[in-house]
Image (cartoon, rainbow, N blue to C red; front, side, top):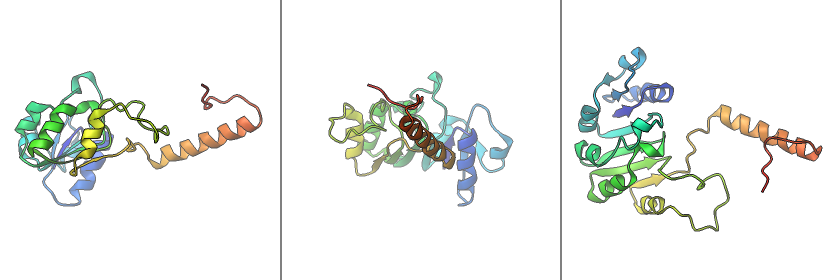
Length: 183
């Protein structure tokens, strides 16, 4: 299993995966001692070549844009599984589509994709969504695309509920609230 990005979330993923007894490879420009006890830090080419599955937890920095591109896919094991719960811009979508079609990628689980802005968190059930990449990816039986919900931690959900309730109460009292959406 390859883990790209070993910040707070990537470290947690490594800890959980270590419980399954699989061989763990990790890549991060800033290795941590905690992860080094559980996984072998390697360069990206080694991680690509030796991982049966790769999970992304790198930040959305300009230098990370399309870190998984056609060249990266060509270095991976045939049939690799890709998981992206970090940032859509980490994967070149066109290269992913081609890699899935060729079988180079055997499966993908994507909580985020490129150009997903304005697709989620609104009722778009009657809209034609202007994102062909999403439609193509969702048409593959071996690709799962979820609506970028990895941030739904207990703390985030609690804050959403608290903010919604306080906004409703303020609205009822006729008070201003920073959470009111105006058109």
